[in-house]
Image 1 (cartoon, rainbow, N blue to C red):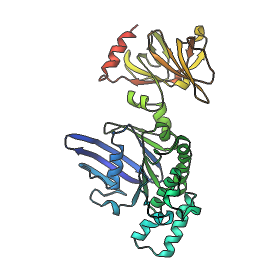
Image 2 (cartoon, rainbow, N blue to C red):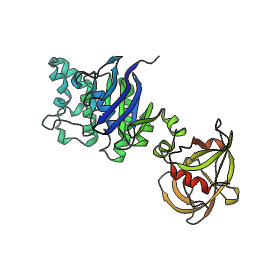
Image 3 (cartoon, one colour):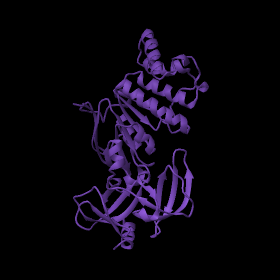
Image 4 (cartoon, helix red, strand yellow):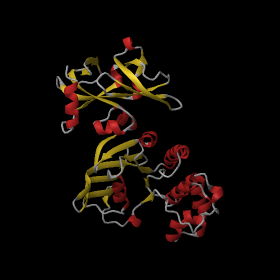
Length: 361
């Protein structure tokens, strides 16, 4: 059975009349990779800072190994943080940067030397011990920041968007390295990002956030395949989201047609939203398609074509296909019951109400 290492209970954080965190509750198990995912300003970094001890929560409890740590200073908490800007000391070389925490804690010189070597070996930079920080690339600086964080042998490593300053290829390479490092160390990682692809690729568990709240928790597959609401479906990956009605169990209607689906348990004729991912749409001839659309534009993305098309209601469709088509061509789209995910409609979205009237049979 997994051991809970961090728990947040009913945590709120307020700044005057602004509530940054609203009733946050979650647990983190030892040795797993967690990601806080959401747009800028959603509260994910505030959670990280609350756990680290850099921000004092307004109410609620922050627990570590079952003990409340709200009043414990940041430097006494058994965890470390890797910041977005790495926060390396430019006046120190690599060795001294990595050794800094051990020097502060007056660890013996021999042990410092051993642990610095081991930490640099973990991040595959042992030959850079005497380099100046200014001589390192962005990716190397990021790995040095991680080495400095893990040398104190924390039970939890907090990472605040540490890959955001890297170029696209290096960022992808570092995703593999971070995931591999977490598995080799066996410690808990809590990673903050606004990059959906990054979260899906690296995490065991994702917490999707918006406006100070956690909207959905789950594995990457669960979050992607079974989004809980419009925001999550739209934020995680790319989606076609269509208003419709749940006619009966396993039967959904949208765009004037009724389709077999894999969902059940809703009221007859309940308003819903239908999510179809662009890679689940298959292009066929107009007469064989379940829907007909007209191609507006297409872009070659390397391993697939990204196609934008419009149906006869004026709604846009995003399609990912390994085959090119022609601009202005009328094509058919087909999909299976399991290619659709049905979400209950949120009545507060008035825009959806207006669109729904357009699609009434």
